[in-house]
Image 1 (cartoon, rainbow, N blue to C red):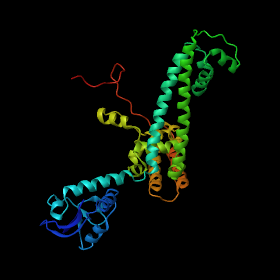
Image 2 (image 1 turned 120 degrees about the horizontal axis):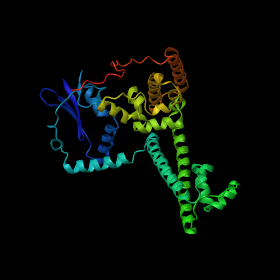
Image 3 (image 1 turned 135 degrees about the horizontal axis):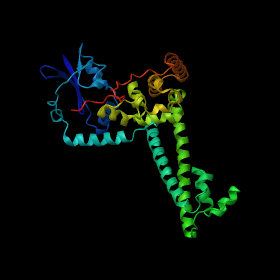
Image 4 (image 1 turned 180 degrees about the horizontal axis):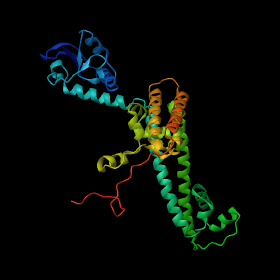
Length: 360
């Protein structure tokens, strides 16, 4: 049976037993044209030359899984097909690879890739805000410790950034209070105020990033947004590494995205495996009794996978239908498992204590 082999310099139809080249279609010596062909291969496409050679035999094997629609994939050592035998020198390969690199890096990036970076940027902003907020409370708390009970997070930072001195904050809040905090010099107050202003900037950027993420998700993932909310959809896409990557995962993996540490702990030490990952944030999962969460998480992961496939490959909108089907499944789980399962009791020793492992 002939086998189809694709190299950077051409496509070859080779006799699998003898290793003789039956037919070939060489790439152009123009580096730009050859780079364009190789870019199509890297994107997972099939070249016209490959289809043409595959049609010359009734049955053909292929050396690349990318070509599986043309024939059965098979292992084949094609190292004897070298570019020098067909007039392609090392300098030509060098120029082709440079053009290929420039071509691929200049390709437009799908919005879900930007979404992944935005989610990771949001995580960094949240971590930074928490660190600065903790530092500001500890620092300014020496001057005005009572403010921690009167204002939280953004409001706390705004008040410190605006007034600095506790007297101005007390007047704005319209309260009568004699603070037990220590006096600060003007320079110390200005330094604490600068930190508060920096924290306010981080809060502002966090809100803008959240709005940006919501805008991308609502356009790029309408089915997932109908089934989940925008932030949870974005979080799943980020954990998977992209929308297409998420759509290619099995539902069991989607169910456990975000619980990798617990899964590795289970594999390493034999502890109980996790039942859910970040999809625990869905209301129907985290509000359910503990004995129902595994089944509900499994049902939700299956629907999320269908929604991801529809969004990744430009399918029709079925988000409302998927949501109704999931809600029906949740009701069925609640009806079938209304009470917690009875856990088997460990055997006890005569003294009333549970038996442990026998000593060696």
